[in-house]
Image 1 (cartoon, rainbow, N blue to C red):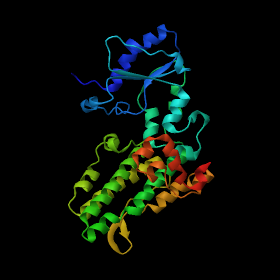
Image 2 (image 1 turned 90 degrees about the vertical axis):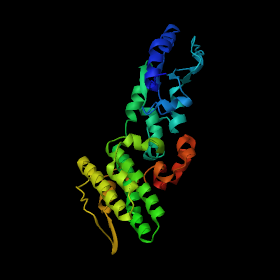
Image 3 (image 1 turned 180 degrees about the horizontal axis):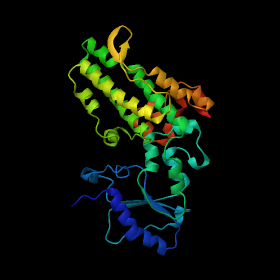
Image 4 (image 1 turned 60 degrees about the vertical axis):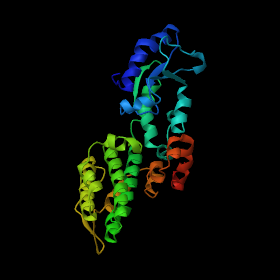
Length: 321
């Protein structure tokens, strides 16, 4: 059977079958394919068909109990989920953002979860509820964006010299592990500079696209080659940073790390410039930790809105408002 992307299947399923049925029943609704799933990100493949596949739709109604179970003749494998918009948003994000989000609110929501609301597709918005909330959550507000960028640059600042330090003492495995950690944060930063939410680990590389410098860093045989490739990737990020005008231009020229034989880029001024440009007094006075994605790698935490909000309590106390 020829593979058809899930979003195309969902669109055809709504237009040709489910939409007409709901209109005939006189049920005001909105519809789309949103939430979890590689199809929502447009990254599904033939392999995706082994579970949770076939025709999937998300229907939003003022009162879900008024939507009868829709039986589709001749179509056994399908999933039509009916939601109330506020409950659905709270289940994914941990809160209904239509009432407004504080800085802590934004930072307590994993980027993948924001993608689950803003990616995918809306096929009909008869209730007028999906378009406004997707517009609201399109990307972080300015201060939160700065804080997230500062958080990732802080992670890089802390570990820049470690790939070389591990290699110097003969710990090649440690050098490779540090390089991989740095590469992940480079990809996340690259997406943030494009004003895009980074997805979770499985799809991070696919979303970011090819990065020859990181490919070289991860395949390199020596720590010196890894360091050089990472420095080139930082230079690309700094060029992207300078293009935003968020701070004064930053110099990407490598410098020695103290008196040691490792080279780093000077990120302190970049981080300081990002933080100084934040107008929110709470964020501006906080350490640049970034959001919940940067303080937890636990999949259960990042995939469960209740746990994400609990983990968010580890953010600086000033962000608890």
